[in-house]
Amino acid sequence: MPFPVYDFTDSEGKSVIALWRNGLTKRDKGALDSKLNMLALNGTGLSRGLLAGPINKTKHIYKLIIHADTMLRPMLCKGPFDPNSDFTLLLGAKEIQFKLVPGPEEALKNRDILLGDKSRRKLHEW
Image 1 (spheres, rainbow, N blue to C red):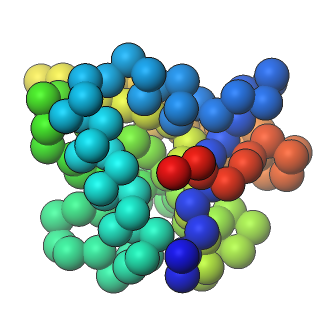
Image 2 (image 1 turned 60 degrees about the vertical axis):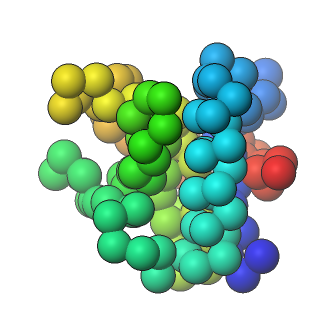
C-alpha cells in the first residue's frame, strides 16, 4: 500500500480500532474496510467528502466519512512521525445527531500519548 495505515493501541497493545470494529454490523465493517483500503491507496487524494479535517478547531485530527447502518467517523491523523507518508487511526467514533461520539478531544489525547511513546501503534490488520 502506498500510504501505510497504523492503529493506535491501548495500554495492553490492542488496536483501539479493532476493538471498536467488533461492535459494528457486518455492513458497517464492510464499509469501514472499503474506506480504509481507499485511504491506504490514495492518501489525502481521496474523493471529496470521504476525508474531512482538521476537524473541530484541531490542527491534526481528521475523520473518515462512512455511511452505512451507522454514520461511522473513525478519527485519524497524518503521521504523526511522517505526516507525508502514513496515517494513524486514533479512535473509532460515530456521528449521532450531528455530534461525534466520542469527541475529537479523545483522539487528540491518543495522539499525544503516541507522540510520547512510538510503540503505541501497529500496522492496521486487514
